[in-house]
Image (tube, rainbow, N blue to C red; front, top):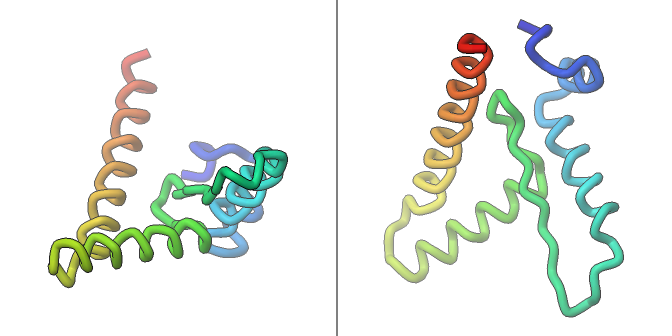
Amino acid sequence: MNEVFLQTFSRSANEESGRVAATAEERKEEKYHCLPLSHWLSPLSIETMGAIGPKSLSLLKDVGRRIASETGEPHSTDFLLQQLSLAVQWGNCASVLGGIMH
């Protein structure tokens, strides 16, 4: 299964779940560090196997809390994370099927 993933990230992915996502967050922050202070950046990073970067998870939990406070639905964060999980799974499926077709 490892041959499916980029060799560059294989070692850090094996060391700790979510490490690749955390690294992607750091790279995004470095890339956009020169944005003016009037802009706010919060990277969103989800690994192919579903691990979410720590800053991304914090952002998603905050969004879920805000949705819950507006809608009164106490499970809003869970629903949000489930929808993102499904989106990752659909993307993985499309990637595999696209590779088979070519």
